[in-house]
Image 1: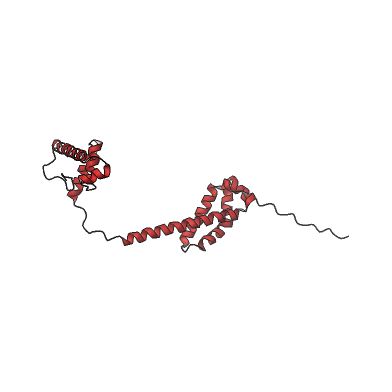
Image 2: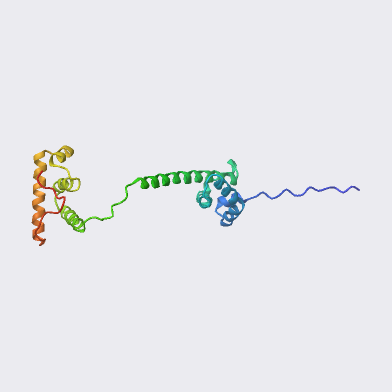
Length: 201
């Protein structure tokens, strides 16, 4: 009697994608072990720096895990979904590298900094003035800031703010008087006004 040849049982359906989507942490490890090389190959084939490629691979799986609920097995395989995320991460890395390169080139084109730093007395003067300005009424402070920090003339301040020239001069005059009174009350040593403090112009 001829024996009936039995076909092997069909392999159980791989449930990795379902477990991954459900948040099974062991599935994350399995997915990395199974597909990590493919994602790394994708990254290294585009990025010149091996370290960048490894970072992209890690970022891909982090993004996939955090966004696992958006994976739809009916629209494609898990490896296809991971590679899609990997491509976007590669593009992000390329764009970031381009920005970094532009920044480096810009810095290289800047003139060399001067060897001498700012005059300590001038720095102290500016800090003192800034502190006193903060106590003035808004209008007076604004006019003095434009004159002191931006080194604008009265006419330029009037043109920029739309405030009449006479009012600009009045605000600056009153502000200067208030500053002088405060310095005298605080016991500041008499002397010339701090460098850059606006005079009548």
